[in-house]
Length: 284
Image 1 (cartoon, rainbow, N blue to C red):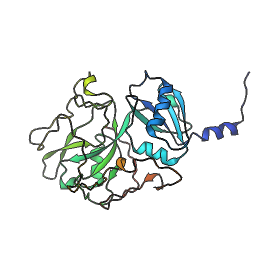
Image 2 (image 1 turned 135 degrees about the vertical axis):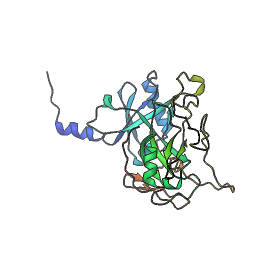
Image 3 (image 1 turned 90 degrees about the vertical axis):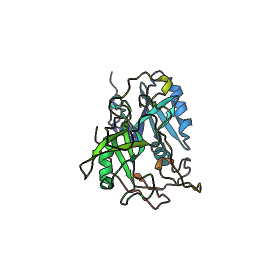
Image 4 (image 1 turned 180 degrees about the vertical axis):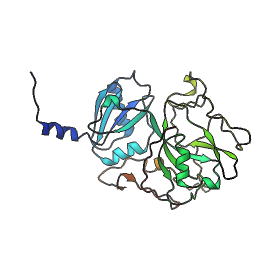
């Protein structure tokens, strides 16, 4: 016996789950799904109504009734829940949950060793694409006015070691080593194998190959070993917020909405402004 439900009813129900998030926990297949569904709401400190459903083994779809909660959860990645990294993707009706691939985690990074001929947003985007999928490059339209220089938000590949740097050409026909500094590395990062998802004491991965190699004469330093993840501030202790993931870390309540379009507008103390940036899908 086959019962036909009204198509209009099914479509109306399905539309409620458009523009939501689907997430999984890296190495979290052993976790109780009920614990995950409780823990994520506590971790994210959702202020208003929030729905979450299980969409398969270690896959969950969540819907935020407050758009500010949705954007805050995305902007403040990476998240760690129950000792596992959270990997999330945008989800809409029509997608098959079992086919969603969780391969990247957005991290903010800066660059060391850039020459004058490299100081352009498109050049930085090209350099960052050797690490992962470049989502945003800051600042837009101006040369950086802080010591941190250009910053890029890049979706790094979680199943590969983090790239520590590469050699690039210059106008003088010499090669220069440009190192990558990741600003918001999660606690679950191993400085031995340079992979995400575990710490040094739990490392059983082979050492990365060529990701830290710095040819002789190509640069001043070789960033082997653990990288310090520190944002520097002026000597007078006046804090300058340089990284968007550190901005508005307190959940926004009510109907306040400081968003413009689909992208966050962010004004730094140094007069930099973030405009709309197109996400470029490039692979290493």
